[in-house]
Image 1: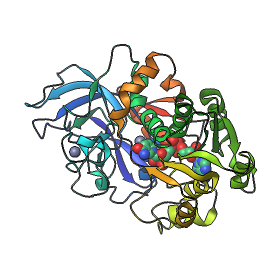
Image 2: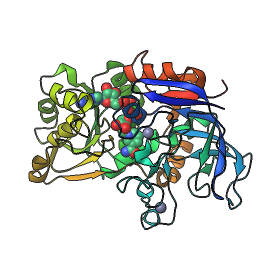
Image 3: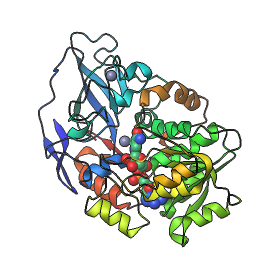
Image 4: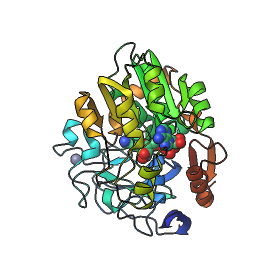
Length: 381
Ligand SMILES: NC(=O)c1ccc[n+]([C@@H]2O[C@H](COP(=O)([O-])OP(=O)(O)OC[C@H]3O[C@@H](n4cnc5c(N)ncnc54)[C@H](O)[C@@H]3O)[C@@H](O)[C@H]2O)c1
Ligand SMILES: [Zn+2]
Ligand SMILES: [Zn+2]
């Protein structure tokens, strides 16, 4: 089969690999029909994530058709169209039974903090991902769902991560009717978080980024006010000014470890790896939220410490909430919103790229070329 393969920082290519076999009776093999590249994949692509091994196939956002099932699989059969959440989880451990699917205790022998994620380094379990013609899906009775007939393929694909994560980010904000919600980052996660904030009763939604084409999308897709942080000496001062000097009620970090906006932080994190990630957006979030407010962190950070303004968070009495999204938990509500027409997830898809050209896709998405927001990968295009 053809599969995306990591060769080192900024180097990926498509190679021939063996079709993965069933390794456990509850495995399924899925023929991938669509995959996507996530902002999280960029952390891998940039060499930011520890233990990202040469030869790994990335891809934690994918849908496909069941090609083969192990002997104990009951919920899926060959030929089913399935959507697969990015989390790999057992469904029965202490954490899974409490809905903390991203914190499963049974699927990742390499780390205790994070569970399993498809195609996301050995730190996240060492599972190959779905930017490929075929992928092995462990715990096939637990994670995947059959795609409802009314749900378009690209919309289903967006539910496997970006949409569910954005929605989860807004949920963790615990938004009350009329709240002002600020979202740092206008990538797929930030756009979906902004859109979701309205569905949860926000009275005002402000999206902050420096890429004008993405801010334009935040206005048209998520009906948000926008601020380009590059146009201000200090974006935090602007956020205070625009909220009667109180601060936003809820702030969502949808940027993560590679945030721009502060040279020292960026260089110590992204270039010298002295921090688990540059906390610029997170610190702006802590500074921009009002006292007693909530900061929801969807942006991903590496395992090491980062220079987060924890004292200010403490003295402001903030609630900090965060996690890798427990994707499948969001699906029932998201399905309702999609069916009712409140959400059209694939509105943010800008590029459809054949798997053979995935290296160009990574380059374009990473360098933010050609107004790229969300690239979809098509095997066998
Ligand atoms: N928690 C989860 O389950 C989960 C799931 C998916 C993605 N993520 C993480 O969410 C983050 C966003 O993902 P994405 O796919 O939208 O990525 P993306 O790279 O497309 O978007 C990030 C955006 O942040 C902007 N940005 C950079 N520095 C900024 C700053 N200081 N302030 C405001 N904006 C800034 C960039 O210009 C870019 O538009 C990533 O860190 C990703 O790893 C987490
Ligand atoms: Zn992702
Ligand atoms: Zn579990």
